[in-house]
Image (cartoon, rainbow, N blue to C red; front, side, top):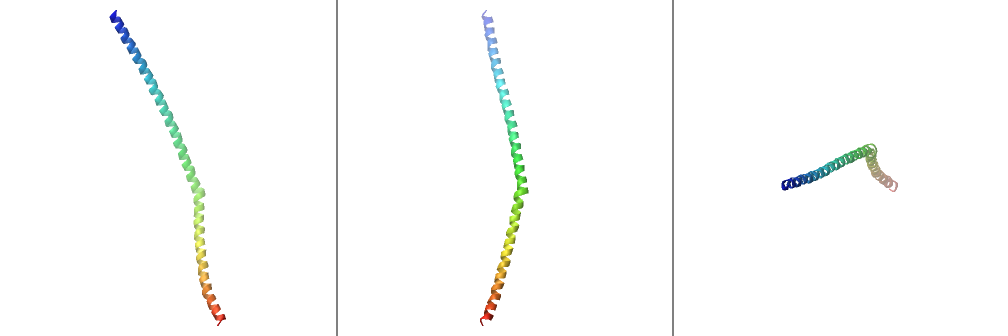
Length: 105
């Protein structure tokens, strides 16, 4: 009989070990599922970020860059106009000086 009790105890121990292993396997499977879900969520977030980047790039190309280029052109024109006005002022100053000198001689 002691042998039977010893075998029963061994079987009970094995049964407990199998139960713990089964529980650990369930935990591992749950963790794998969680990781898979997190991976899917991360992929979705990456796709959203890429989509947002593409939308920003298109908006820059279609709306912002043309405005910046127009501003640069206007700035160059403004500089050109100021140069012409300055040159005209210098010419008028020189001619005006001669006219005034001739008038008050």
